[in-house]
Amino acid sequence: MKKFFTKIFTAIFALSIFIVPMQNAEAVASTTRIKDIAKVQGVRSNQLLGYGLVVGLNGTGDSDDTIQMIRSTISLLKEFGITVAESDIDIDNTAAVIVTATLPPFVREGDTIDVTISSMGDASSIQGGTLLQTPLRAADGEVYAVAQGAVSTGGFAAGGGGGGGNNRATRNFPTVGMCPNGAIVERTVEDDDIGSDGRISLSLMQSDFTTATRVASAINARFGAIARPANPGRIDIRIPNYYRGNVVAFIAGVEELMVTPDNVAKVVMNERTGTIVMGGDVSVDECAITQGGLTIRVRRDENAFMPAPYSYGSSLTTESTEIEVEEEMGNTVILPATASISDIVGALNAVGATPRDTISILQAMKAAGAIHAEIQII
Image (cartoon, rainbow, N blue to C red; front, side, top):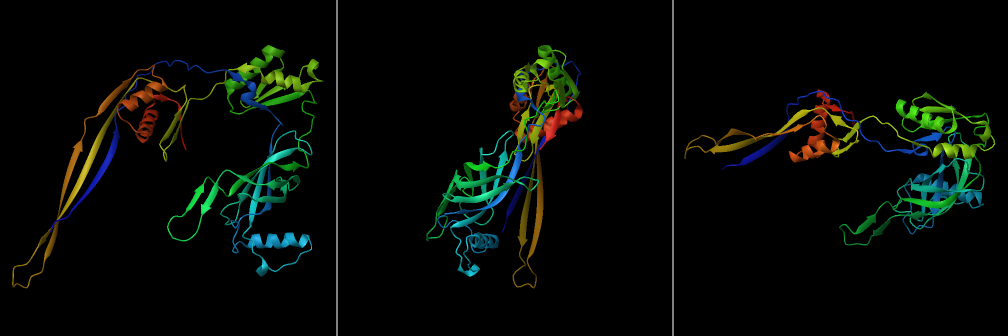
């Protein structure tokens, strides 16, 4: 009797990289508004959080095992003068939820904001339910908004009945819903005194020395010598005297100015998914990349030897192992010093490199100094 077990090991071999230093051409960057790369310090949003109940569900709420759901329902009924025991409550039509919202800047009392409702128990769906009045608090513990209203979900869960098997269909996430304009603002955070001392500051979304200098230069070219970069992430601005009574118009004029932001050349790679995102300003020196394939096959044979007839011997089993090694001819691609990011991708595709192979090759290029970019692995 003979059995064969075959194991195949495949390894991609990223070979030699040869470098010839040369000057790289500057990548062309696009201009954008200051509004899109910076914001005024002090203008910010605040996160709100609350715990509430969603009622009116069609048997898709929390089960009796959700103890916080039962106690919350009893506490709610007590506020209306109704006393019940835990054993008398059937909460299939009710779900305990966490309500979250973002309080935008400059909203006033009476304004409405959107809220997100997420089930925290074992409810299968909160579709079609109604959120009961829920106070929303900030990190300081104060109530800034109150939410209530119909819950809208972008999915559904359907199925049930007998027959066994997979008889249930779910689309998107029916345990998370939205309540558009479902919260009324009860308290504001920011005041209206921005620039009251004659100064404002801009915060860059991506800190960079060059970008901060260009933003300050653009402002000074338009309004005079009123701006200076305090650090790579902040530009301090002195409001001109003729704008002291109209700070909003001054900020609007600053935000509309066009600048050319500067960014660090970066390559972001996700080894789990094989995703690679590279900026257009990534450049390489002249180099040669060789990719070869190495395949190892291990074959194991089992041989059985039976004893002679009428003997007192026993059967004997032996194993023999055979190893085969195959190496494919490597493919070599030479990239000139003027290579752009599209040249890198095209060259690696030409040699049949997969996204994971490309990640290994780019890491080797970075280690050898052939690629001028920051490598970030997420």
